[in-house]
Image 1: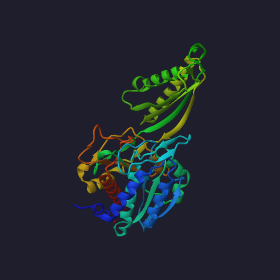
Image 2: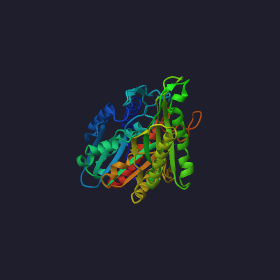
Image 3: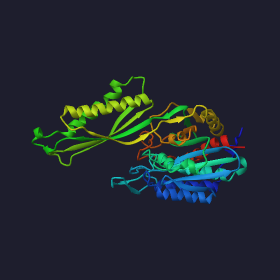
Image 4: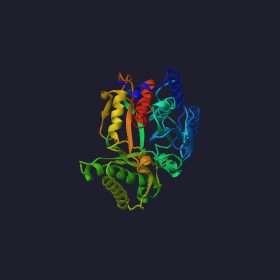
Length: 409
């Protein structure tokens, strides 16, 4: 049996253009909320397809493809890159740099596949724009900035996304992952974890390294905090509950014989349950503040950097998505999986208007498996490089199939 979605696809000329577009996106990533050139390129592509559009949330772009009466459906693709120096060796590898909010110049890479997401959604939009007799309704295309910092979805909502675009009955999204091309993984209920990122500044007292008695050493104090924090999950949390506490950065001092006045580290906390989240965050604060008291130090400063909501697939909407994906890709290509500890701000878009959401993962690794040395590179690795042809074909096919399951005639 051939589905309408299987029959609708890009021709060879359109496919070549999409591949070239992807290579350009990959070679020129931009940091979160700085996706100015990317947004302009998306707008140019939408103009070429005759799709109306507007800027939203600074560097976000919203396209609206209207095709008569019918449902309103939204589909989101994120567009930002990461401060990573690319090491893939691709002939279209990024050599671009960007500037972090603190002024630090860093290399930038599409190390999470957001270039694949943008290209796949543009490819799906081209398929649907060229096949208007096969569907009816309205498609809202959301090209969202700033996913990596959890800023983009909220920025678009704050800029009136759902006041300026038709409100959808469902919001879809997808993410490329290191799994075989042409396959999909999907969950019902929780998909990805909540995440809280904190910056902790530990205040001590500076002294010469030869006079430690005159200091309150923030490095020793912070080191005790880091070690003690790892006991939250292993010794305070019910083993049947899930959480991760990660210290990702630690900075202190300028010279080996000076005990500095302060130290700084950053934390990332991931949970699935609101009560567990509250328990872990409370324990983090208790431990940090208690270690400072034990050292006779001032109270540390704990700042929230950003927070990701839980990404949740509506159980009532998931079955039709699974059916559409299986019809388009094959029964064995669609795997039902447990939730992952990764995080996404995608959930904000539907939650803001009470609309259900469905989010799935599609493959970016060659079907024959990873050919290089070592394990398959994962997202956020400097070696992460989705297989171009297969990942784009899979991303476009999955998006078209699911959209037509709601919009198709």
